[in-house]
Image (tube, rainbow, N blue to C red; front, side, top):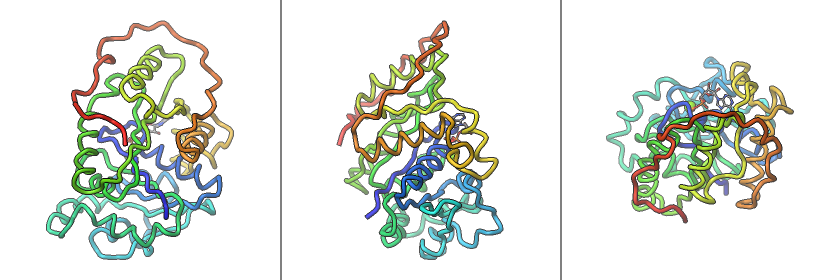
Length: 286
Ligand SMILES: Nc1ncnc2c1ncn2[C@@H]1O[C@H](COP(=O)(O)OP(=O)(O)O)[C@@H](O)[C@H]1O
Ligand SMILES: [Mg+2]
């Protein structure tokens, strides 16, 4: 039975879509059958992995609303071990349409029950909100992976996300685990990035992945070619970071080898904002 990983953070632009695409592609590259599900109405994940709107007959919208089996929305990708369930802009209305459905938080979980048997991993790219689509993802998931951008206010809003995880555990999915917190868009030259990393580690302890994803221009270019960075430039830093992340998850807790370039620490004043921690009494762990 496949492990279902929801990539979630209600903040936009933290690297959720990039992580969902490239983690799924990395699992697939090491020959683990993987399904990538885009549940964000913006459908960046679908276009970023090369799905053309005209080749999409059924999207996750039809699965959630139209009672179409998940299997009928699955599209093969360019990679042999990677399938995709795309999103569509009409998913925008889904949260409202789902309100009258009984057990509306469990629609995705039920839809995935049969489909997930074919895969070792299912990776879900969540929208930047804590609405019904994200709740469905967390209810269907075995674990949640939280990307955090190594930037100002990195920890802002995470208290709310952790509180949502806690509520989901209590009422919808007691099995939900925290897969880990992933530092993204890390710039080794900036003292700020290092300070944020320190702060995130202080707050989340060993829930933070050893693997850190560097800011890498190849990573940001790849989606416009409809490719995971592994296919676009397999040797770049970003591709290697995401392979390391996949291996770290596969090894389940065994730290990945330390990264090789801790050079170039720039002098930069770090304001107090980076010191803030989410105001929540929620304790991590599983
Ligand atoms: N490691 C990285 N290096 C460079 N650019 C990145 C990296 N990760 C993400 N980006 C860029 O940052 C922007 C936001 O990332 P995205 O994955 O779309 O975030 P989210 O899904 O959380 O909104 C995108 O333009 C993406 O290409
Ligand atoms: Mg996104």
